[in-house]
Length: 294
Image (tube, rainbow, N blue to C red; front, side, top):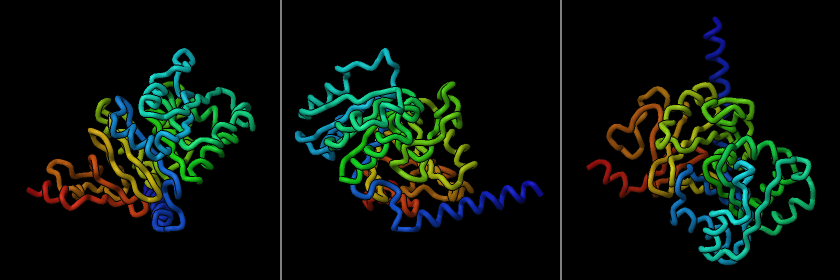
């Protein structure tokens, strides 16, 4: 009897998720702005170029947020700042605090109101949550997206952008569901993982989404990114992005690209391929499909 009740609850949750996903009035990603979500590792030139372009190119005004890192590694002349400067960005401002009271002040958020882009560095995602969730800073992050800006981030700076904070436990990143489970919610009804192939994590979101079928799982490997706008994302970089959708868990769904050995409860997308977040459907270019079928 207990198993039947649990199954009924799971079906109700899944049904409510589908209602949300099918409502065009509720875009999953930013309606006006964009997200650049990187799975960690080396951020390649293609990814950096897209982020800077979306932020306004040479006229970009970028806020760099190193809060996920340890205090000993947070320095003004970070390699990320130097990279942005090498790409022609003249205005890069570091914004950091551990105190949510500070993050809730007008003085602290003033630079965000002038910015066109924000970049979250890697580290531990719960540190970002502790500092900014529920503050004026979080409100201004979203305001930047609402005026057409871009928010990017890598590793922890990727996971924090989802609505659910995967690997958010203070005890370590091997705890998948921990004492921090709320992300900044720039992309709704989504849990994001990173380093998935490099660190052999590709099955971790699978087990989690089985318990939360209302969420879409997106796993991003190193040196790879998704660029999100409204209800679509595009894959950039050199590796793969994995999709974990409870609707596919029967193991009978064929990978949209038709790649051999890539069928089952989750599947991979590669550079140039797109995904419809509204309908949870891969958008594979025709040329890619032809190549895969040969």
